[in-house]
Length: 320
Image 1 (cartoon, helix red, strand yellow):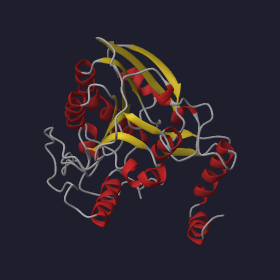
Image 2 (cartoon, one colour):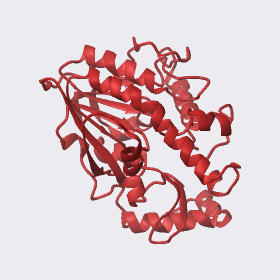
Image 3 (cartoon, one colour):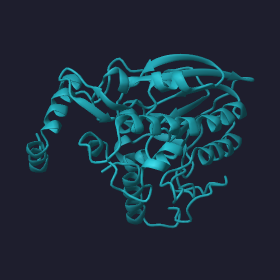
């Protein structure tokens, strides 16, 4: 059933109705996962590096990282779907999750997963106030510190780039980083005032900014590291079966641009001897890595204040 607000939005924005029809086609009206997608925790790796919203063809064209590049299908076209279909209800006490994205924290109760530890970089001093995101060098620093503390745990490292905000040269030139007005639907409606080509270049430069720090981390981590993405990205490509132009990464839309992701395998020294351990005080441990960010970390805040911080961070990343 749809809420009254959703019905009113559909009448005001017919594109949303067509998007919903495409979603119903891809999910068969019930599934919140791409059935062809890979179960990332069933794959063979010691360290999993996630580049948020990085589609395969962009990565293939622009990366120069060491390792063997393959592709996989993601289980979702949105971070929330990726987490729900890979993490929900799982015993992951052999895994430490270092994440720049607030999406896990927002959905943590529904996901009901059990990690050994979750390091919320966005909350633990890693948020960059000027760029309104977590910069890749900060994520790499936190991940290196976590790898040193937990040498016998699988490590998942979730970078935000190439996800908006745009922090490369084109992004800084054409987009107001102080504004929270950016939405992918606003790009579709032509309200941003730049061409798709400019948006695409700004987006791809976000990947360029992240890759050197990803490589630095890869060469630091021991064992088998896989670099992948939670989902892809569309900037004007057509969806299906209704061929509307799409932008961003709408939920439940399993077209190639949104679910075909990189899977780069790099071996560096001996494999880890992975052992499960009892969960630590996940997400509340102060990060020791240099963040260069915000003093407004969530460690001393009440639950309500942290929830407000989560929504503030997600709004900065273009979520409404």
